[in-house]
Image 1 (tube, helix red, strand yellow):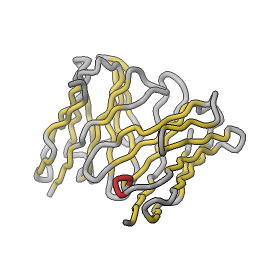
Image 2: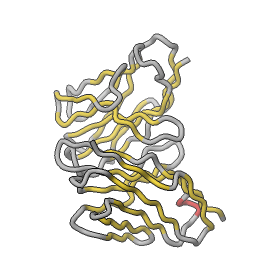
Image 3: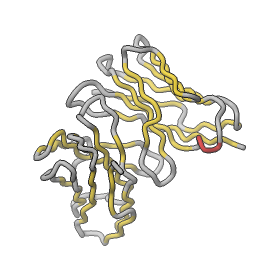
Image 4: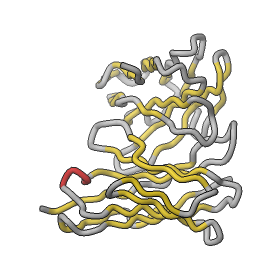
Length: 113
Length: 112
């Protein structure tokens, strides 16, 4: 099956710890994205990557970091510098950036206490 | 930059009735307008999209209309069913290298 996977579905961390969220796609897509969703809110772009070994900050990149060493993988690290890390994190991919359909993963709900 | 507004924020309809959600965008250069459906605890899924070279697109019970002059587009769901209950997001984007700008979402409840 082709698709985009995120793991784990639920993640719990103590304040002050870094945590890495996984995102993998086997759709052969060039572009990948990370969004944050807070309860009752829309999607806010954290980071995006148009091609392997390249990534750009989105609207709310502070306190987050990413890497894109492989085409199929785009992990997101939530660092201790992120003031309000508890949220639902969504990864997406598209054949190219711009006006192409984005395919979303199932999301990871991160809770930091 | 682009700004997308979406109304209403919540919408309740009786099963079998129609539902309409409207979005406006600010940048006339936007040329791609997807609609996503998000069920509770899941990632959004594309349900229909439209490009600026057409004014309307239909897929079974779902249709999208685009008015480029007024810079707004709408999602129409006819004969609503309980499984249509979800949060719907509109978005706008332009060309290569530009990202989607999403609206804030509409929570649709279809009452049996």
